[in-house]
Image 1 (cartoon, rainbow, N blue to C red):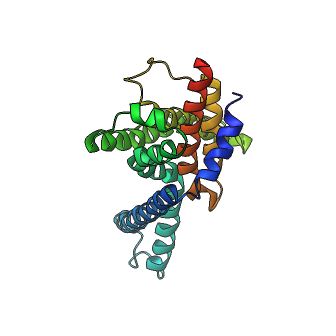
Image 2 (image 1 turned 45 degrees about the vertical axis):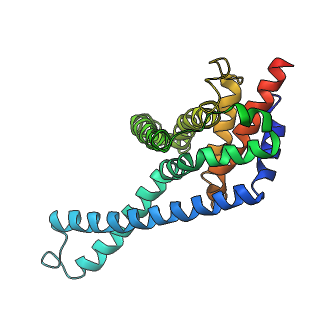
Image 3 (image 1 turned 180 degrees about the vertical axis):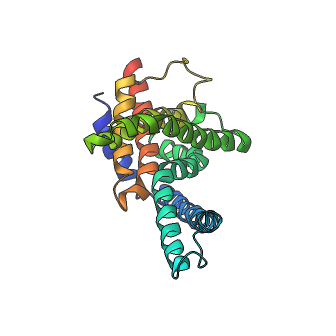
Length: 234
């Protein structure tokens, strides 16, 4: 756990490096593009569904405008719920580039021993991360509804679930490049991994910071893994 605070600071400073900054800009642009596509598709889907359910001008005057507002609100709610899934899927796709940029500056020896992930494996990791996030958030939904009366309960449920998921995903972003050359056990414990995931999961709920959070998680995880590995063998 002691390696986490300095790793966060190093990861934050790395965001302004040219190589990482370019990846950050590309990931934000791609995330926004995906969100625009999803938002438009969701609006039309909800509008069609509400029309099919009978909300049209034949029922009452102004139904079309009300249907548009309802469709927009439902689409925005859906986007808020899947933000983490889309953002993490995009960053997973660029994960190797982020890790390589950090290693090139700070961990050249480890970088030389790393394996390059083929495009197919990177795509599998991105789709897998999004799929796991979607599945576990769906599974968590009944528990969130069960504690809805507490007000803060649902937010805590989803925060814990996503903290567990993100911690594992960020660890694997780095470790998959090195596990063939080192022991199979990552050098960070479950508590450290959860804390990293919890911090990034929290940032993903903060406007504007949520654009930076996934890449910050990747840069921090890279420093955390390598600093912990060096400390383990010191």
